Length: 144
Image 1: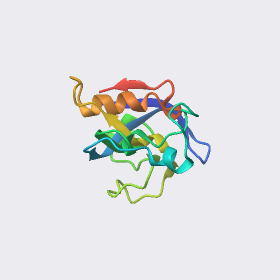
Image 2: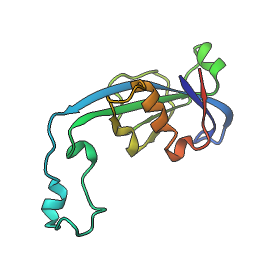
Image 3: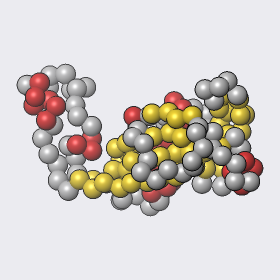
């Protein structure tokens, strides 16, 4: 699984078929539901400003993913072991994928991705589906 998009680097170089892979998946399991401490700290009643809440991973039991995504100029560039053009993460990955300096993008929505274990789709299918909901991957195409 991978995604392709047209991507312009911070240096202004456009790669019309850049190739993106999830390079890192960390799994966190929250065992029990817990009180929304953000709402509690703000002393908000149940029906008051419902849009203000702490992240789902901090209040609802379940599995949550932290993703790192790496992009190359093209699928051929990756196959030829060329250096990546960019890395996306919420927090820097603990597994550096390449020593070459590349563009980095901090994307909040790559942390705390809910993994629904009751579905028949795999962790990667759910993770890639999540990526396609992000602005960065608007118009992305699935590739094998």
